[in-house]
Image 1 (cartoon, rainbow over the protein chains, first blue to last red):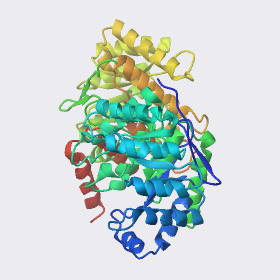
Image 2: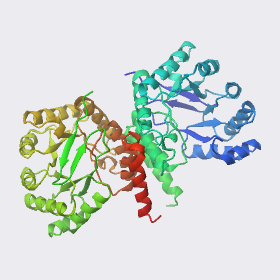
Image 3: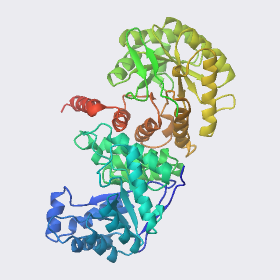
Image 4: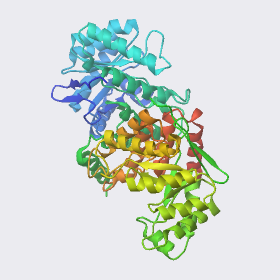
Length: 290
Length: 290
């Protein structure tokens, strides 16, 4: 059993410590035009109002870190990503997770970011390792490592563990310690493969046992094509927290998911006297006008 | 890692197999006067209408086994327990879980039960082991073993594992195989001890790894004194299923809990193509008149 590591990320004024003994760290996923037509259209027009709104709302709903993605087809991503980040930093003070598949945009974003960012993401593909890890090292950031490589996304948890190990090893060679690598097991769609959830959960357990690193996961994919998705996502996140997930990327505005995360922390003994649970309950009651 | 065992329980006409690769088996907890004044009063008057209703409702809501408790202070428990069981068997055909602390009542109940019952419960106290296990053996039943002994309920998961081992060993000496011992880790109240959930979850994992036995748990205690208990119970059951829980004792009429169990099975890869999830969704929609 590897020792549990602490990943530190920060903004200019705020530090977040991700560790398996702390309450779960929520990375807000909303600032992302993918699949959101209105946001996409607004960004194309240089309108950042929705970005501001999404940033404020997510932090109010409990996000500790905000994921920022500016992947607008046809746009100048380095410039746009910087603008979106600036906008978010103007209205909130939480650390950012810089979400881009474009190394140029990543370099531009890291160069303007004040603090220690979380980079989303590197994977086990040779091309990705070579492009992303040196930037992470240069800027002293932390990085999310996706369990996929040049052969795609492995079917088995054992093979995903191997990819995680490869990423951690390659990062280490550049002087990026395992405490700065956050592994994403990749949760695929259960509608396509009934075992998709199980493989992700098993991967988390194995990665934690072997490396003690922090673990992130986007938990919305899993329920794609199923009815009542929010219940599946909420339950799946709680189970993944039991497996070792420490910083899910999710939408904190979905109450079912936020409640499940708080309940999971309570069940894991990470909420002394249930203070956070009770506080959140009071806020829900207040919001409901009771 | 011990091999996963299968516990078989049955009524005259129905067999339920409890195994970690099958969907979760729900043991309905409602037929129990403890803390239910109306039921208590009705039973005292020999009125079994609520028993019938609770039996039918729970099976309709997905219970696979019904727990039957007739612990009415001052009543003739052997006679009353038999009557309540007869009533339940008249309106449903699922196997029963005979829930009594009175060995005489247990003997009486087992003598009229047709099928293989689940006995709730034995524990590691010398007195309990000596009174209950011979009855379980004599009637070819299965038995729930609570992780407590003459020194009370241990604080640590390690010590609870030891009690589980003792119960399994003592059962084995009488010829009751480990496949017929279902362990209950005991979930205490988190309001009293922030670690109560964690200890129960850890106990489940250890018991499963060591013995491969099936695991039950009453998951309602855990949230006692907290607000919005149903969300805590639902999340905790899902996490316990990930840890290895196979047959929770719960109230299937609480939708949050039933939905979480279905979602947990989906996440564990025990619901091929999500057929059970989709079916339950359709039934919810129908019930809501959509």
